[in-house]
Length: 97
Image 1 (cartoon, rainbow, N blue to C red):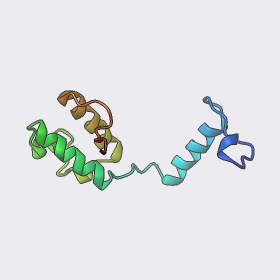
Image 2 (image 1 turned 90 degrees about the horizontal axis):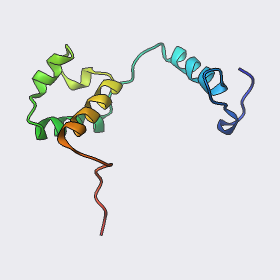
Image 3 (image 1 turned 120 degrees about the vertical axis):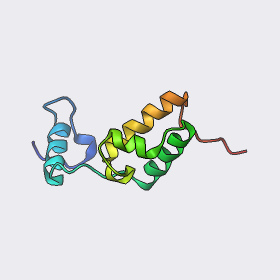
């Protein structure tokens, strides 16, 4: 990867400088998955409750004892799946009057 001085200079595609940078960042991270955020955990619990899904049963599907033990991408994908199951569209934020 040539020297890049700004995000605006990153190039796309599989052989682009952005892909090379992402690969290097993943390598630095050591392949460790990121943990879920508190907001993700709280929101997933809320969705599970609305869908009448027991949190313990949900966690057993992923061979874990708690939502906090899952990685962020699994929680994110689970949130999306629960939103689809419940028919929730959009960002879900209410407009202020």
